[in-house]
Length: 360
Image 1 (cartoon, rainbow, N blue to C red):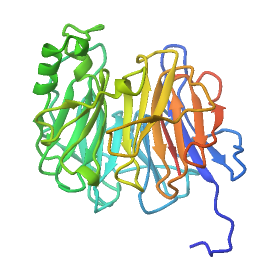
Image 2: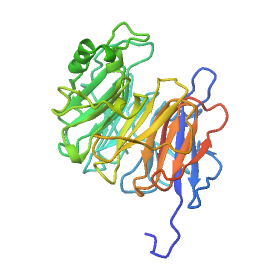
Image 3: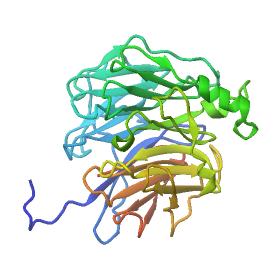
């Protein structure tokens, strides 16, 4: 442990993307220094799959140098801050991992979500994983890509309640730590049927696809049992463990309502962040913050302009003031002071289908 007089370690920023059309993927790291400057991007590859694609990056909640990344070949872990990586004891090969989450009180218990829809659990900090056989793909909205388990989260007040956001197929809940799952999409579909402004079809065959186009799920100890769901049509909150959903009407505050990410600060359960944009592949994006569990929102992206959809945001697990967010085209924005100042840095040329960012 560092002594009080030692110099604090700089915040590390990680970001990654996928291969898409003529864009290349990759996994990268930078340092955000106390004077707001950033080092050059470093490409991470030691121990990782060839031509690595990073879909999700997660810091261990208690161990600073332990980091997990979801790749096109399962989850990998670093125990030295990202210098080297190891493939974990995962039961399958060539499985794309889109989400990783920790049990709220037992960090040795972890969950991972995959595409095609699949769920995995580890009881030993990721060393070994078990495939949970009862995973279901609701099949509500077939698309031209496999349904992705793009978000997964456990309830702090009900640790065995695990929720999963499916792109593009709604939301599921497990009440037994992931062993069995219940489809919670019925009310989302009904909302689209009852309200014209919640109808959205795009390339699907149903007007409910916008409500089923889930991107993230978040839970907070300040409101146990009440998950927040980010979908194409905005942010929705349930007051009954996902049986019914309520539009929090983020459009009252933001001119953009397409929500790619909603998350809870690990330091304050009343603080939420949301990535709001005009569309999935739009030309503008934004970052918003709520200090009252989603009742009101204020814009955070002052001093920079996102030239594409804002895809993901993260708060450092060890520093409440350190934030980062990323646009689809590879712009990474990092702040050491809760958004008062920002540093912008473009990922290496050609990395322009970016999904995730982390800092810590």
